[in-house]
Length: 149
Length: 149
Length: 149
Length: 149
Image (cartoon, rainbow over all chains, first blue to last red; front, side, top):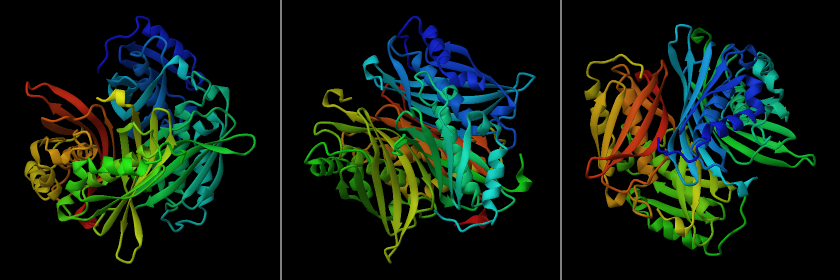
């Protein structure tokens, strides 16, 4: 992780951006933790998020990868900068079968224009044991206010 | 596209698998077309699928990429084989702002164990013009019935 | 492909950049064709480029993917801009066993800061038939002269 | 890392496979360390491996990512199984400018048919400090002897 802190109120900025994403409410995701260059999102399994065998749909896994990385990147940006996903890739290591699910992203390189992040999805069982279910890489762009699309 | 047809009722098999995915109903996606080695999914923009700027969330874009590829792959599998996503990668070329959205997947290589697919997301405006919004690659695995997880 | 032409002497600029890459001579690659938003590189199989089964090493396949995309991107940049690879991903569809090998890249989106390209590696047999051996996506960045690293 | 050890002579098997790759000699790479589910490759910068600004060519970086992952995967396979790269993706975080270069791969998931690995490229300066220059994910397949292509 690179990253000295760019902006004192980064947690508030990230939380505000999270709240402005209707899709987070639609899948029931919660912002759990934000540190400089790190973000954790939590999701509880719901039947409507399933694929044909009642595992968590890979699209929801991808959503956690993308967002955990995106908010990790945003935590290191300047106060008035926004974040835009450029591309991501994930490997699905094990099906997510239920329980509590965590998406965790961290910044590998906080560049002048791009932020490169690693992100993972973990499944937690009732005993608190965790299994790594997906691992990915995400490239994000800093957007200055003048660059709004 | 490789792929002679493996199974006469492939359209019914793909449609059945699509219906068994609760997440498709949760985002409002519809199966539109299935050909041997090809699949098209349609989605109408809804506010609850948005990110912070009211564009389609990248996780939904990824869902279309993964599923269009997955059903394209499934269309060439044997009657009793199922499909499992191994990994995927997508580039987000333009934000999806609304209207009708299409996910299209095609098989590049239908191998003995793996199927490699290309998939795209297109946005259609009212005049029927289309813009390419995302392009990706998906690796999928054939699952024989005995390999159920 | 986006991309009106930015610079009349783009072919000369691309050829010059190709010549300045010692690694191209080290593997014996030749620049074959440059069009606005498109590039083709040719390679003849040599034993020293092989892996353990005498197929073309995946690292050489990746080199063709990266460079065909990079020069396709460069062909649309301004006269004084350079190109830098941000990330790439490739699927290895079939082993490259010999003969004439072609890397082809095209620009999917020529953005203000980033260029997103698709690239493929094809193997040609003596009869002139071609087989698709690898397919990939490459993200590249425009570098203005003031941004030299 | 998953992976109990499958085969007592795994180091010899990996070293043998490395020696059978002519491309490793062609770029001057050396096998440095093999542990169950881990592999490290070393490379000294040479001018012929450069791109247009005399940094290490991204194709060589990709070669290290692919091979470090591939040999990490191979270290956990059965004695008579071989390894084949399915796909990989890497982010280029910083240009590799010289000195000693290390490719390191580790197995994230050693599955029945596929091995999913993470790999990185590090540059070491004269004082022994290291910088992360590239990070990637690699999907590899177990090949039983009967499956030779």
